[in-house]
Length: 116
Length: 112
Image (cartoon, rainbow over all chains, first blue to last red; front, side, top):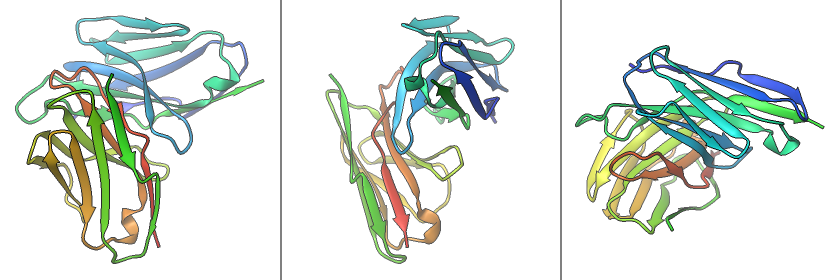
């Protein structure tokens, strides 16, 4: 069974510092990996989706890398701002089969606080 | 563009009462649809998923059921709510080729 782990569970950084968030998974035969942001009491907002053939994706200040062989993904947020305060979750999906097509396994998330 | 609607946003229900949460998707056809629950301090748990009308797969045995009466409509139901059904319920969709999830805004359910 695929296990997804996010360490640390919580992180506090001063404004302007770069954020590094880690996601590890036990089964390297993943199909896609997706990073989400969740604000308190809200739904999940997709940040970046990395398909299995890709090694990284970038959007603005965000960059996500994927190393399937080591079972790791890292989300970098450059020059953090107080508005980046949220919980960040990663999710991985395995190669599709008749039974597991489209299902993602989520990590528990990293709660980030960016202090002014 | 594709949008996903989920309602209600919050719900307080007594133990033993029925439940119906609705999710609809616009701007796409034949999506995969999912119901997740997020309990306080815990991760996301997949409850049900559907790859087509009338096709429902359940991930965990529980007090809940799901139905997909139309291509872009997904309903989560219960005949009698338990205290343990409290949580944050999220609907999501993806295209058949699994290009990632898009989530609704969620329903906060409190069973009292």
